[in-house]
Length: 488
Ligand code: AHR
Image (cartoon, rainbow, N blue to C red; front, side, top):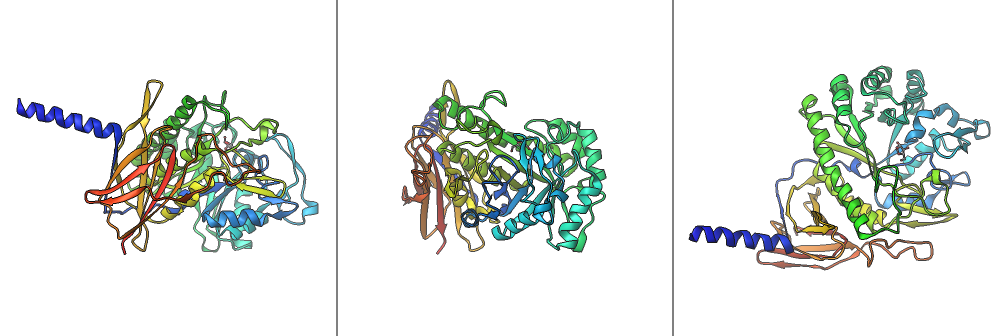
């Protein structure tokens, strides 16, 4: 009887703890390195990402470059997206006055004057100190055309471009192929891509969209894993799929809840695709490359629907931080990821208007999380209260931790509960000094605007205290927090 009562008391205590407090314990045995490439970006010839974004009046915008340098962009995927499978790279080299004008049939039938081409892209990557990652044209291109591009990059220009995507979304805008046909195409294209000038190519195959596990199975089975550096995965957070995307700024708490639930789903997606990859690549040599991700909403009123220009709120920041924590925790398989898209398109880091620019809440998340780049993952165990809405619940607190080469530990925690602060007991964290940064705001739909560009920004934060049993932290509702613990 006594034992029975003790069990009940223990359960109640656990329930109380679970209901109100999160317990986060750190493992001090880090091993896997969080590839810095997880913090990569994507820029497509779409709307105002390149033209009137990165590239204005015939020049690369240096204000954008310096903002992006600050967050240490490790890799930039280009030129698409769907654009890639209709792009012929030779249109974009040589004398600008002689470059042909084409029609961008994917994105609004606008004129593409090819003034931003391969050399301009390489220049942009150099200015950013980012690695180039080109997406090759499989849909309307040929193995010869892709081979010539790689020869131009690595033999003629000696630019050591290693990341080459063999097509984009070949199951849809990239050619409506089935997985068997695509993997045969992959093998054909890949077999004509030599390692010019000693640059070892890292070839990336088109992977699944969301939970198309059959695609992953077929491609992994058909392409020998030593012929594959990575398999891509695309995942967007929509309200209801392509039909109803929802507004970027006018959403209810229930819509917010749903977008966070969809964000958290990427954890399951990665685990399940990775488990299929394990069958063919048990040593996890093939990377899962999440080379398009983010929230996709309706465009801003009055803008071209094909330009995918959307505002970026605190909700976007919570989505970005939650997703990056998930990527970090899957660092054994996820070796690269590219947010869609850097400037003026979808979940952008930077929005521009004429010569002005502003940094979005998502930008500040990348600024806070850059500390994880190439650091050693310290697995976290998190017991968290739930965030409940309309009879559904999701974990309120998520996080990831790493140790950098100087022994400093970084923990990024997110509380997605819209209304409740969550007290956290942080165990097994040893330090002599600790610092904090936070990104939050009064409302989930708060944004930065051209009249108030710094409404949301990461700030110093002191919501934690060292106690005998660990460090106690109060994670404010709807916040992204970074703790930096110094050993000395
Ligand atoms: O990022 C916008 C588009 O989304 C890309 O062009 C395509 O690959 C995806 O469907």
